[in-house]
Each structure stands twice: as C-alpha cells, then as structure tokens.
Figure 1: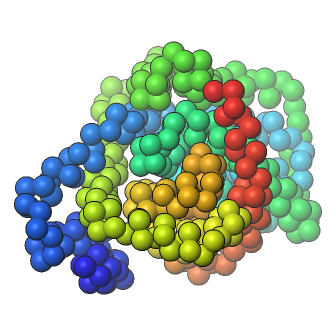
Figure 2: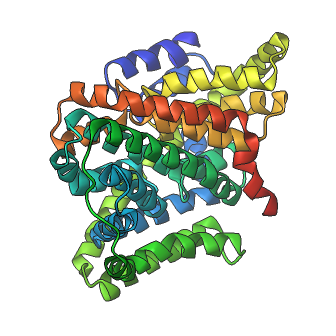
Length: 423
C-alpha cells in the first residue's frame, strides 16, 4: 500500500499533476490491487464525502465574492482605506494591508484579493518608491490574511472535515487575522521610514466622509453576514445565500455597476471554482477513507503517545510539517488530506480543535506566498508582470513577520478562543 498511497501520489505531484488526479490515482490503484472492497464503493465514498450540509456554504460565499468583485467593490474599499490612513508613514503600503483584510472579509478568497489589490495599488507603490521587490512581496503576502478573516473557505472546509462548529471557527479567526494585519502594517511603516518613502497624502474629514458613504454598502456586508450567524438567525450556509442576494442588490441597484449579464458571468466563474474545490473534497474523502480503514490514524496516534510529547512540542512539530506542506499544496488540498489524520492526534494531546483549526489555517496562509508553489506568487506574477525571482525575494521579510505571528497564535490559545466563549 505504500507505493499506491505514497510513491504514486508523490511522483504525480512532482510532475505537476492536479491534486484531485493524484489522490484519485492512488485510491483507484489501492482498490484494484490491494483492497477486497467492491469497486462500487469507490464512487459511493466520493459522493458521500460531498454529503455534508456545511459544504453548501462554499458555492454561496464564492458567488458572493464574485458578485462583489464584478460590482467594483474593491476600488471603493481601497479608496476608503486610503482616506482613513491619512498621513501615516507608508500610508499606501499600510492601505494595501488594510484593503486586503477588508476584501478578504467579503470574498474569502486569497488569490482574488491579490488580483484586486495588485491591479489597484501596485502602480502607486512603485510610483512612491517602494520598489518592485518590496511591492510585489507586500501584495502577495497581504492576500494571505484572507484565510483567517471570516468568512473563510478554508475554515468551512476544516469545520466540515474535523466536525467542528463553523461559526466558532469564524469568530476564532478574527483576532489572529487582525494580529497578522497589524504586524504587517507595523513592518510596512518601519520600512517606509527606513526607506524615506514620502507620505502619500493627509487626512481630510470631508473626503473621508464621502468615501465612507460610497463604501458603506460594502463595509456593511461582513457585519450583515456574520451578524446573521452569531445572532442565531441563520446557519453559515443560509448566511452565504443572503450574502449573494445582498451582493446582487448592491451591485445592480445601489452602485448600478453590474448588469444581469455580469451576474450570469459571475455565476459561471463561481460554478467553475466551486467545481474545482468540490472535486478535491470528493477525492480527498476517498483517500482519507482508505487511510482510515488501513489503520494509519490509529498507528500515528499510538506512535505520538509513545513519544509522550507535551502539547507545545506537538504543536511545534505540526507547525513545521504544515509549513513544508503549504509550500507545495494549496490550503484546500492540505486541509482535506491532513485534517482526518491529525484530528485524533490533536485530541490525544489535549489541544482544543478550534484553536488547532486557526493554527492550521495560519500555517497554510503562509504557504500561500512561500516558494516554490505559493498560489499568490503566481497570481502576482500574472497580474503585476514581475519576474518570479523578484517576488520570491520580496516575500521573505513578510514570511518572517507572519512566522512571528504564527508563534504567538500557536502558543497563546486565548487569542483564538476568547471570543468563542460567548457563543
């Protein structure tokens, strides 16, 4: 079984095979050559992996994000952040971090944020003297904050895989996400002072009020969606549906920047992205089922118990593993494959599953912009037209900042859990 579930998938990964294909290949070979289970069970397990009510939230939130993007919401949010920052040193760089955080609270998709913020702010960053390396690294790394800011697709997938409360995961991600954003902003300010970057403007109350009025419908959306969940009026899935309706009303009737044709195009893009995610969900469920009946989770738990690791030692080991995995796999694939394996270990050492979910998401957020295969890097290369080598060098300081934040998140559980105690 080692060659079907280990050697074959790793070989396919090395040659660039899509994640769903390598998982399916390993599972099919195991069914054919090793297991005595009837082949009909293969597709039954795959479809069973999709029979989870929580997964219905994914297409809704993706569609809502596409609608808000088509309506030009990102530009209004960016203008509002710039008006708010005023004469803070490195204001444009800080605005990049702030805009990424706000857009992430709407779309929940890191790569979409990199594309939106990169198109709008990268030319200004270059014009102000930040340089290609720093600017491309800032745009690539800021988009990763979205994985922790609710609503987060990664948290929905973790909640479904680990059988944990998605509303609790959402609220647990707020403070860690803001911590990363604040640490990133502080680093940008320090670098701007060191590089003698000119201040890009001053705070003007009238201008701020005007941009606030224009951005108000967009700013209200996260509060509207999360309020429905936390006040008990809807589940995350139902709130995702309301988010789609809200986005259509804002884009079509308030901003008047979106036609019915644009809505259909956004629906088509959302359907394609949803299909890409759910096919990984189905194949990962099959792969995890085979590992489970083969006794791999039980063997790993027994091995860990024999080591007698303290919770801090276990979390350190898991951080190293997840950081390495994040360099090669996207968060969706990593969460779906690793969560069923790690959850028995998490429970055996007494780590809170909600806290562990935030730690896992924080690790995989860093993987979104670390070489060699961080998705944000390739999006930034396409959108910004910057060589990969420049982006690789540009993201390293920001990776160090987020690693420091990861240590704080990992060993300060209350940062994640304190807000969940009221739910």
